[in-house]
Length: 416
Image (cartoon, rainbow, N blue to C red; front, side, top):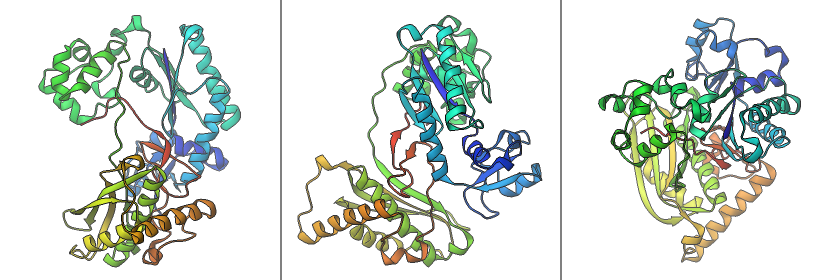
């Protein structure tokens, strides 16, 4: 049996835990202090008014005039995450951390019977309340595999506990909508419709070949086994790229200021890449103008860890971009290869620049974000603050590198 723990409205709940005056009130978490941004999280009191992730600030105020919008504090959410890990570790060993607000536990031996599994679930809930905070609630699902356990955790919120036993499969699932399963969004649902699958009853009865065709490959076969209660082996995916993108505040949307932000994003991505032991072979620049289609440029490289060389190539990519005002900018380092698969730079100057980049990383890890940085990013050194991505948990020991984390999400059922 697998126990899946999903923290409820995590960012908003952390703020309610840290700021007692927010408790019991509708709260929205926003990434930027401007009217053009949107909520990245909402408390259950806010969800009652129909406010969801992605709800714009203006719409949030229209739906709930009394809502309190709080500027996101990613470092506090990371601290809370690790406090929760500390709490649950007093009860049962964590098998996998899949995002900042999700983790799973493999129940083995005498812990597999439902009565014992329920007991462990209640102990986990109590440990989180006692050690991490009374406002940090979670929903728990227990099932024969992780996909079904995650599905069960979504069936009762907040503070729920749902068990799906093997003997209950598939009847217990028939009341769900297809999109209630993790990883099935509109795109996969529409593809399933093309194969005559409109309900969960039909999904559970579909043959393996049908699901393989619907998903377009081996993932359909994996879903066939998940729906039967089995836990198929899933090969670990290979890391291909790392990068950052940032929606610009109004005062940073002029092209030259946006360029400074792009340099800042490159600095972050390169530090993250080096920390994880990769070299890149491709640099991509993505620009979304204020009122024009997106603009993309890229360059292929010899394996590179050198920020100076990457900055030179970024400058070359930026020069032909034609837009005066930019809404969003992104930088991606692609074609990643591991240290062990890469030869060191041939020329001495390239080796010096690579060593310089590693030295700057060490200084910034020890003394804090932007203790030392390249002059070209001076205008934007405090822009593009840390964000919590969906697929990783950032490490506070690597200041402000965004998506770097010790824990990688391998959530089942990724959509196409």
